[in-house]
Amino acid sequence: MDYKNDIGYRRETLKKLLYNIQKSEDLIVKALYDDFKKPEFEAVLTETNYVISELKDTIKNINKWAKRKRVFPSLLNFPSTDYIFKEPYGNVLVIAPWNYPFQLALCPLISAVAAGNRVVLKPSELTPHTSAIIAKIIEKTFHVNHVEVIEGGVEVSNKLLAQRWDYIFFTGSVSVGKIVAKAAAENLTPITLELGGKNPCVIDETANLKLAAKRIVWGKFINAGQTCIAPDYILIQKNMKVNFITFLIEEIIKAYGKKMDKSPDFARIINTKNWLRLASMIEPEKVIFGGETDANELYISPTLIEEPALESPVMNEEIFGPILPILTYETQTDIDTIINRYEKPLAFYIFSENKSFAKKLIKTYSFGGGCINDTVIHFSNKRLPFGGVGHSGMGAYHGQLSFDVFSHHKAIVKKGNWLDLPMRYAPYKGKLSSIKKVLDWM
Ligand code: NAD
Image (cartoon, rainbow, N blue to C red; front, side):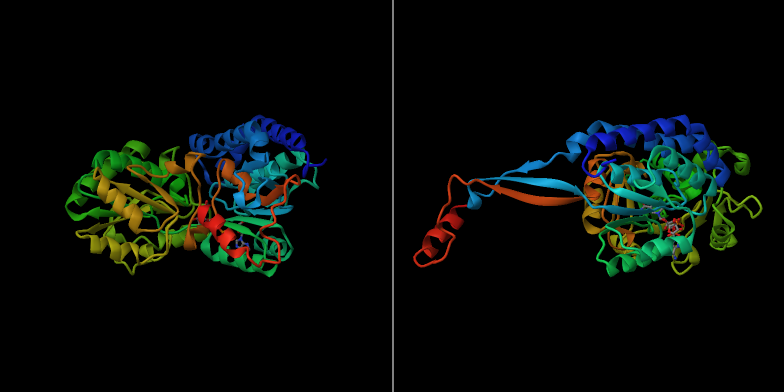
């Protein structure tokens, strides 16, 4: 079991993982339903299928990604061959959240294994069914000294963080991200932090409102709004608001029916603590659609809130649930005032046919990633880096970048011995003007 040096071994274990996941797909989907009634369609699209596709891609490309990468040598060192050697970090800790509990645990794990690391995964305690099946699959697939799942909550997490790691990959909230960063600093351990934030969705007067409403409803209410890159609030040009709200309501009813609590396509809130947090954000006098709640069922209907005060709870923190505030703007200053109230978001969405407006927003505001005329889908392209900036995170992954995240990139210059130019060696007397000429020329 030489996972550090034997790429063939890593590939074989990943193939075994693929087989075990495919064999257990129904059980995984059931576990996700048992945890918070995640609809089967969403479970397959955003969890099992996503992981299977990531695995296939990694298995296919592992040799290419692991290969040392030749770079153009510096003429200063002539003659030499220069390359980057990808070295596994060593012991990697992955801490995962509950909202996409299968995907966000398995994807970093797959890349960490592909890059040749030993991995310890701590899945979320809030999705016990999914965590249990992850633990079973991993136990069946890997030697315990190679990959291990340690289940548990905050205490277990803290015990793990107190140990020394060579890399920590954390996905979760900003507040816990800070705890992870502090623990990592103790040993100068490199980290990736995949966090959250308040993701704006700006709509101008040129937008295709009906299509915008449809795409926003999908991105906002998938997983009952418990998505780190879900639009958090709408910021729409004032004159467009009334029409847009009509379209939004139409699209919500089209997607989930009039009896939304009976829809098989709408998930539940993860636990009572989050349900209470979300329910307290709903100010009845501001609700223009939805607002229905059921504590026993952990249900909150898709809810639209019109023009909440910026100081109200719904505008004070990341919503992370099926509540969508709609704010308006008239000038660029209005947009600035609202967006600049918050830390740099993980995602940013613009609905507009005006190219220069979209370009300007992308240039003006710092954020992790986003879309023009859609929501959420930037996540699905493995060729795009996924990650936040500032408070929404540190580092990015997906596709080959994930492999690179879990590898130290060693710079190597292999110097030729057949020539040894004397210019750089002391004594330097009389050499300065020639070296200046060479440096100028380069
Ligand atoms: P969380 O931070 O509460 O928990 C994440 C993990 O950290 C869990 O495994 C948990 O056991 C552990 N943990 C919790 N409290 C801890 C503590 N005090 N000390 C040490 N470990 C602790 O996050 P969550 O509620 O599971 O997930 C929701 C948050 O995650 C949202 O803010 C969301 O935006 C963010 N998120 C980000 C991404 C992303 O890719 N950027 C993806 C999903 C979720």
